Amino acid sequence: MKLHYANILLFSLPLNILVASSSSNVNDQSNYVNITHHKPNIKSAKIQTTRLLCECDLYTSIYNNDTEMKNVMEIFNKQTEQRFEEYNERMNKNRQKCKEQCNKDIQKIILKDKIEKELKQNLDALHADITTKDIPTYVFEKSLSGKLEKTCLKCTYGLGSNVPLLGLINGVGIYATAQSAAMKVFISETIDGLKGIGGMSNLFGDKIADLVTPSFYGKPMHLVTTILSAKEKLCACPGMQKQILCHGLESVTEQSLPRRIATTASDAYYSAGEKFVELTNSGAIFSNPIVISTIVLLCIALMLLIIYLILRYRRKSRMKKKFQYIKLLKE
Image (tube, rainbow, N blue to C red; front, side, top):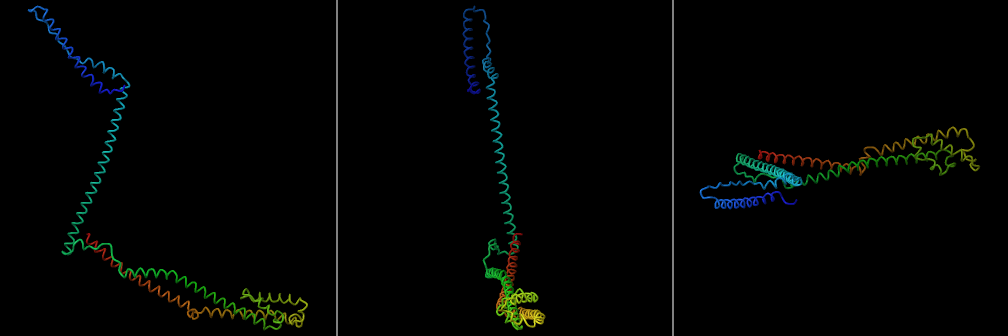
């Protein structure tokens, strides 16, 4: 049933009017006939008609008992109520947003008026000629001291990070140089002392320089053991039997040779120590041009750091005064 119930009810109204008018015409005709046939001295009884909408019962009973129409009406009512509720919720949200935004705008306007009023009163109290345009802003021009401060900071950063490393490298270099010089003195004096021992040059020849190595520094007995073992190997050869160390006063040689080798190694060790102390002395260090240049760079870095701290302190004090003045004007 696709017709709406409201259209059906509206259609029943003209139908009732039509039925009622037709019934009144029929009653009038019946009354007229009765009057003409009866006797003139007898009065005819008037028939009263009642206009009842009895025809509506035919339709109302149908729609009240129709389950399909009831379902349609219930669905329509539910959808209508749901849409009205959603509309009310949206309207309430929009009203709340508008109300909050209006309150914020009102607070901003009130605060702005209040600040302007207080500033005007404070300016009038401080000086009559001061206006709002004379209030200093937070944007300041870069002065010469500020530029110099940044330059000093960059230079100090570069020198402060590189000069200690340079000093460390110089210290390590000086120590390595002194150690290398001391080792050369030890090897040369040991070789010269071994050559001075009778028979050593004839037996070993130029091989003495191969026997003396930096590993024997401070270890004379290891050097004695090495030379004696090399002597025994050479003396075992048939061509070396004529050497002094291989025949003759063998007992005397065996007793004096280790002592003389140890003495030579010890003397070379002390000479190398003296050479190391000489090179690592404070006078020798400060006479080194690399050390002098390092000290000069450190002094320059220290001076730049002091200049940077002075300029930074002045800039902070100047900014502090300006902020205090601005705060006083706002209060």
